[in-house]
Length: 192
Image (cartoon, one colour):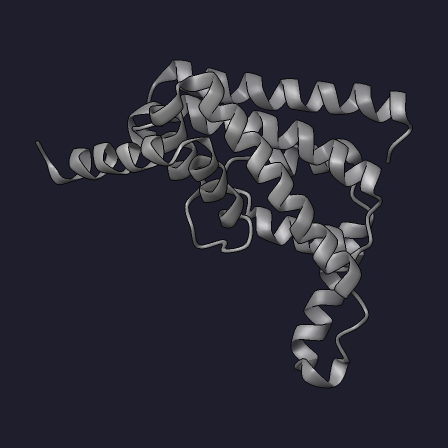
């Protein structure tokens, strides 16, 4: 048995023995520490609890964690005096905020859906721009759903999956579905 297989089996055993709460907390904590690998935690949850339960618990955990992160920066916005920040950083933040302020609902869904998007940054920008709860929660629920199911599907071997034509088709179909659903919900809820 090679070392990677041993680590996966050992980690899966730890998560299984800790139950759903352990799987939830792993993904939840990732929302606040961006260096942690969401893809690995989702794959471990899928290994420990099966595809649907592993994906569902991961989706709930990342959605709750992302929302809390967004709300934290929503309330923090404007409360940090500029004197504590470097002028270059302030200018970069203002440029990012201006661009992010004009983002459409369907674009936000696609950004959240893309598997390699730094979700921590999306949460921060959404909070700082004081995006409406309705827009953020809607985009978060749809985008994270497809993103988590992507990671659950890719599971154990990302590299071999990305060279497999079926996986590539799955990714494209997932992005198209996320976009179509976001457009429908955007029109029905009048979000944009």
